[in-house]
Image 1: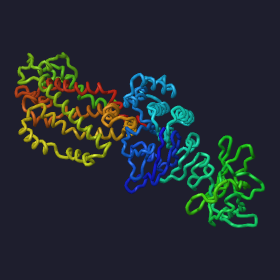
Image 2: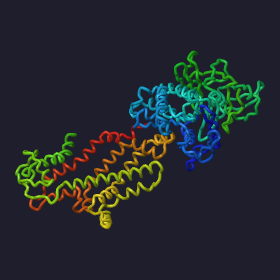
Image 3: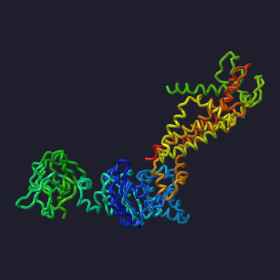
Image 4: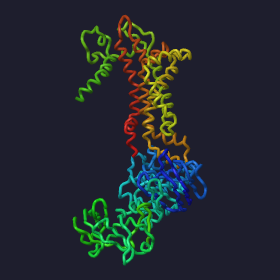
Length: 364
Length: 273
């Protein structure tokens, strides 16, 4: 029920810049995931929104009101921590009602909301148990409930699922989505797990080294990475990136992948074919786009095969290049040492400037 | 091996236990043989230190043990209270806000001096203040002397406690003070209990400070213990053993009372992650 606007937000710890020039507007009721490797500044951003850390530059606005001078207890945000931060000396019920009590909510109202939240999160059977002895999964559920029960307009979650086990993670993903549907809060979710970001978020903000690299819907980020880091980071495995050269031929503009020796050039299509491109280029394609084809213009030896159930990941080419291909198990897989001939739909190719790392040539 | 170590560490305690209940003939050298266990157990030693002269011991005491026991209890408890209150507050401030970062070293420095070097000037100061032979004066010194221990113990416990727990309460609209009293302190109960026990035992067993700062009315148990002798009889070992047994009671009771917390205190840091 609140829009969050970060403008030129920055944080320095001494000489170390944790976050620089962050500009992001999170819409009312939107679910935004801050995604990036550890140390990318995503948690710092979150802590600044909550008020635990003061920014060294820039501004944070909730609905056009700067909240930099508002102490964290008055910002009206809910915060879920990675390590739950459960008050272990209290019962589950006391934990759930803690925020309501601090806000002076009347007893009948408090009881009503606590039991409603306990029902929603299936905590009712253990309401009167001490929090100290509960399992990690229950603790995190309780932590989410404790923050959600005060119905904050802004709900911040800092890697809430990274300590719980894999099976429970998928349960919690749908429960969190359900929670947001019910209360329609503005949600900011910090994670390093792209699966969580992809499945839950309306928009994903990818960060690295204190910089915001790209903001977009999960599909936009996946299909059209604006930056070579985003291209490699999103997807599992990430996008293959090869060095190439742009050349002209009678069939049109093409990428010469001479660097992998055995491969023949690939003709470009779409905007990439007409746009002005630097001569040296980074050539990117998703492992899923590798299409085994006896007449394909590209060929690489198979080094290693990882079988992961319905699909297999093939490691191709010389070890330094690390080209990967994801293939269905329906087709006959090549053996180690075989040469895999393949083609790539030129429309699915993404090109990057090797100097700036930015995407060039557009996408279809 | 374990049994041997157990025997070595338990024998002196058991010897005291046995001594306390022996009649004079058995604990003094006059009985030619060594008795391991009292042959005719008696409470004479206890009666003696509380003022009833026994038939066999002709000496009678100038003062009974009642007053020193009270002095010890008052001084040690109040000293523990002072050390724990100040130590906990200081440790919290330093651990959470980084204020007073020179404090830890300064407090440790206090312990680097040989106690005697500090005690004499202190004694003169206390004499000026009229705090000599006064349980309160003794308690204040105990509080000061054990403050570094309370501070250091509590600081490690506070450092181990995840900040997120307090942040979580703050975000939900609690004031700093309320967070401290409602969340931090209750969660630190095991830590507080184990630190307090440690500090109390230090205070309880002090001899040097009490010897210098008390003269007559408020001597403590350890000081009083040395007066249990006479030129006629020499050391009154039976009476000493009886007093020693009594002196062991408060720490043991305290220890049992907070045993549940002690076990948690030892594993405190491991509980969170």
